[in-house]
Length: 286
Image (cartoon, rainbow, N blue to C red; front, side, top):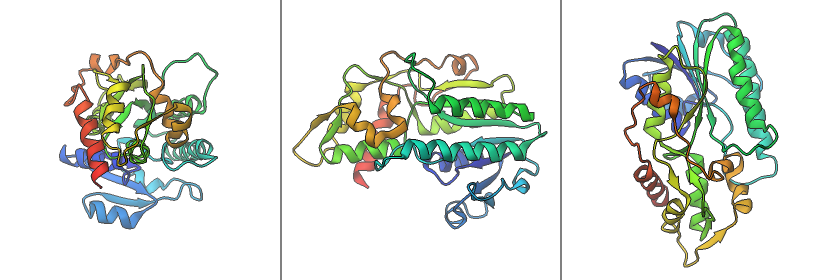
């Protein structure tokens, strides 16, 4: 299959490109950073430069493409600033609009990444609206699966933000939390697999079958502290660093990936604790 991947130079994108190539797929990417893409992938993928705020989606990138894995967007977590949530929403919304204009009438399979969040009964959030916009790409003739990822146990921005807090001796107070998480390689393999499952569309919860307790995750983070301090930080404060990813740590009930299990998905890491420990240790050492 010829697959087009957006956000390929990000941490999860790099794993997804590598997994797709290992499975024998023909891979094209669109990227704002062509020099980095060349450094990462060389000539193993076809590169198309795209600056979504200023440009239409490069239609040439869709030539021969049967499936799209859409990962691009402003990082969910990182150094806090006032308008992060607004920037995250704007960056994703404009990409969805540009992509919809380009795919009109093309019978494609699209797997787009979103974020798991616990049901709260609250008013609709910007994340809900973005998920609805992604699903609405189906009106252009595409089959769309929106993969709502748990905490990705890899070298991504959410782990980076958690470790940055821990290095300063600040550990989020996760007592009572049940955190949905997934090994990064499992997440990449899952998205590629969903492209070939014509009966899988709409919202799909993507977390490992075994949830992570907040206390266990906090213990891992305490081990990353570089100072003698290990101060429990209320989630309201930690959310400044975690940004739109903060809801991942607010759940109190397990998330079961029912649809994925029913579809025959296999998890190399059904319990993601070891993957989380490795990811945190790697970030601390870097």
